Image (cartoon, rainbow, N blue to C red):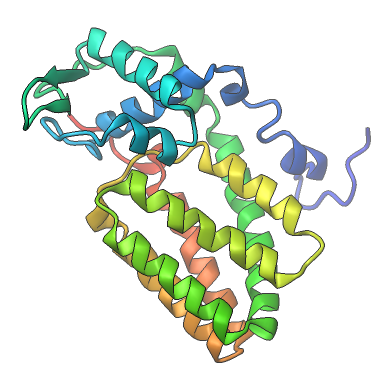
Length: 250
């Protein structure tokens, strides 16, 4: 099929539809995706040596998989020596003090999708800008109060995996409340990109929460220009903060 509206040498069909449908990630099992996301966090010291992982239920919810899937992935990483189990009241699952560097095929698949990830970020930036522009025109005080509650819930989360739920709901509600007919297409892009997110330390998420607070303030002021500026900065940060841009721990 001939590309429609290609500019600057970019194949628009490829940019819009190759990610994630033909991406390496789609060839992984659910267990492998959990394994990869935890390994990538360990590789980049986002999950530091000796740090305690949340319970299986939180991992499952944060990575949007079943508890059985999360448990199987953790067990495989324990067998490989990346994680360790410690008994007792203060026990649980921990990152090993000196986790081995594995040549893992699931991690390789995530890294192979670097170009797909960049395209998804581009698509999200464009589509989310349109959504918040419209949302700033139509937002009600009740909706802003609900978004405030989600920001607070994210702030009170004990870890990234607990933070993910309210953070994701914030974006989904903005899309739905905007009333734009293209919102389902945006949500498909958003959900595809979320599959590449890896667990992050909570202290590194505060800037994103500040941006959500600024976005709600723009909604209350019915200021679409400010809303778009906040969103573009918020999404652009992904280019610097996702695993493909981070140095690996030595």
